[in-house]
Length: 298
Image (cartoon, rainbow, N blue to C red):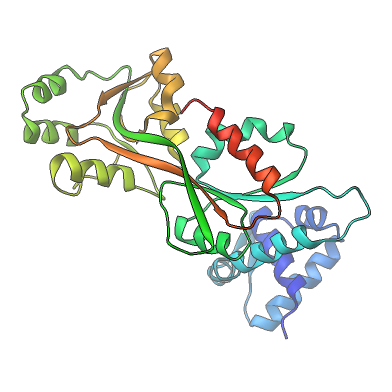
């Protein structure tokens, strides 16, 4: 039978690309790491890592194994952190699911002030609903809802999805076209411009385009960056377009680095909800997190 510690060591080596760093991360010796990887390779029957120019490179088989085992390992680590018995003063642990941008914009700066443990999870909302229902998450921040009977949702804010541009972008021709309701010409003009988007999620672009041009966007963004915060930083003070939630770039809009180009003839607004279980053992801590979100100026 496969040893769970082999997989834990494999995950660490894969992510750090180093036996030495993995050993430090896992608090075991480097020979121990080598033994685990060697045992795992013997078990699965193929090489997992190759050394190329002093770099540790995962093989294609390793990539498949990592993608297949990552989520179960993360859940096991969460369970371990949640149920681990300690002789120290017990601190509550709150697990929260949300998108990366929402975390960075709202909660990140408050983390050092909290007197309880926090585990932040990013991912698809469908998975968050399941994890919340099964007790792996205590709270989620979501623009969607589900009808699982063990969960409740509370609206607390909203986000407006808008077309924005960097301050160095000449939008005079576009504004003239929009003013004269020449929507098709405006669409053609926009498709010739510089665009930013994210690799993981083009939902905002697709929804805005369908609502205002009655079709899916049929162009490829020029720059695919990790997340919307990256888009905001790249656009600020430069040229180009993107479609993003307005609250994520309010500071850049206030400073003049980014402008709202167009809210659309068909405005798109998402209601943001707190999602939680009906019975929550860390309700006090969850209520504090909710108060932080309510006090943020969306």
